[in-house]
Amino acid sequence: MPTFEEPLTIAFIYDPKAHYLERGYSETDCADLADEVTINAVSNALHKLGHNVVHVPGIKPLVGHLAAGEQKSWDLVFNFSEGVRGSARESQVPALLEAYGVLYTFSDAATLSMCIDKAKTKMLLEHYHIPTSPFALVPRYGLEANYTSLLKGISFPLFAKPVAASTSNGILPSNKITRPEDLEKTAEKLRSQFKSQEIMLEEFLGGTEYTVAILGPNDAPRVLGALEVTWYNPEGGNGDAHGKGGEDGGDSIDFATCFSKVGRGPGQDIGTIHADLKDPLVKKVADVAVSTYRVLGCRDGARVDVRLSSQKNGGVPNVIEVNPLFGLRDDVSLFTVIARNNGMEYHELIAEIITSARQRRNVEDGGIIG
Image (cartoon, rainbow, N blue to C red; front, side, top):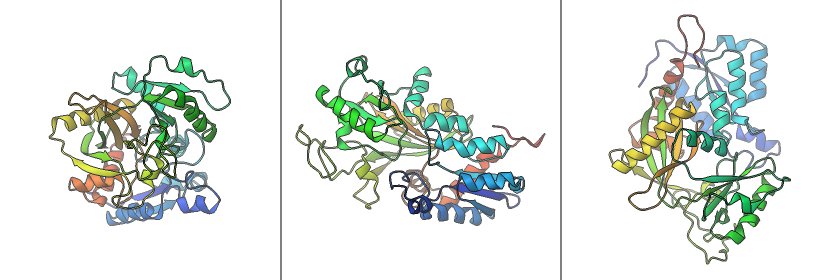
């Protein structure tokens, strides 16, 4: 475990979920925000490592600290702000910190702004020849959508999702589209729900899904471990929230929906299987994830979701999503599960993230690299 010569003063910035729920925001709006379990886990880990912790509950309190010049006494910011408003919400706090020259953990504002938009992420991956499923974009609500034209270059089955939503918001069994006649209805429903976002249509990948945890600086990342992801969707079928199967007879659901991430407990949510990095296929998946980490500019840590193109032995690992800010609950978050599976305690994980961030400080002139 990394050690520190002396205690640091670390500002811990997060958006408290309870605060926004009390002010009328929906559970969907707050899905990514920090719950009490996560806040306490990170805070306790920082204290265990011997650091002094300054709690900064959101961007508005941060503005007050910056205006008062209090950031000058901080050695580091542990940034866990997902933001609430706008398509670049995850980059708002980092952008402020960059303007004031404050060192902080995790990726910079540019990378966070890129990765929250799944379509822009895929465009960049395509440029670097990193496998990702072919896709098309349905314009935002209110703009004309020519579905015939959109289908050129992509094939059924398709998967529809808003480009900048997270935690499977808006993802129902019906989002997997197997018939052309169901396309417009599904896409228009999503456009009505997510009016400010484009809707992405990508070719559905039928193979196994993995999530890979990566730590370290961008130029020297290391794979902490990986999980195979399994699904539990008791609603069944390609139907609605009440479990009524679709017209196709209620096929099994082989992807995460908003139902499979609601925290009902073991056996009733997303399942995971430890993936052995010595397995040639898992190693191939991990290599794709590391390449993704590098080209997107991730740093200190990220979780990369990869899915095989088919269940056959020749299935190609395709990147489906990149999480430069990832869940840090010490009990159920995928990254922390991977850490435990590979012998890393929670406070050791937090220490390694801090160590990676501190490497960006330019000792010679007192400035900050990155």
